[in-house]
Image (cartoon, rainbow, N blue to C red; front, side, top):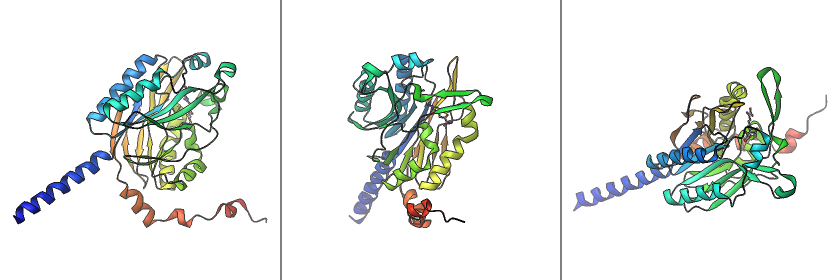
Length: 305
Ligand SMILES: O=C(O)CNC(=O)[C@H](CS)NC(=O)CCC(=O)C(=O)O
């Protein structure tokens, strides 16, 4: 009798632990998108299926998962609305596989598309039922010229900046704050999301090779350390077309700043990482930087000398 009770308790505990583990596995992916939307969907679908099979409850795809265009014209003409074919295929995939998705940067036609032909760069969260639960539109646009590094991109030539941050989303792996790529360079954004309750920050990206080599890992780890959040960054890797390549190294970082997973800089793939939210609470408890932060007046007011 006693052994039976102990046995049954142990069994239940094991199931509880297993559930907890399997509910907190995240798959952070990297892909090489091209202008071919069909091929991109099929490559991403394969990654999502594999991630699900390996136990992930949420899968992260990078900025430009839908496509990377080879000219401004092509980028614009391939864009769709949230009700278009591409997003609807992903909502069906999420429902069929019973998995959450972060679609890191969708080329979304703007509200006045017919007249101005402008798009948003939108990070979409889809739940396991296939509902869109959040859309964040990239608010810092990458208009950067680095002549000595061969980088010249002007995102604002075709993209409208989003007008606000969005509330962190409750998911099976934790509360997720949404950013996109270049947003990573603005700690104000990550701190604001942390203040609004984020436990995990996400920066799906298509970093250039030159800026990635210099800044990618440092920035991601810094954002994790400052906010004491997990940071998940799906990435584009390799050559998209004759004019553009991306740095890769999709990364998962824990709240202490340790790299938990790294997809490398070579080819498409994924890393599976356990999101243990106890790491968030213990890191914040042991070093309460958010409580030590002074109010914004303090940093605004510099004493005159
Ligand atoms: O253009 C598309 O289709 C998708 N969007 C992008 O690839 C964006 C805008 S050009 N890329 C970045 O923000 C790179 C940032 C970067 O490399 C850095 O901050 O160093």
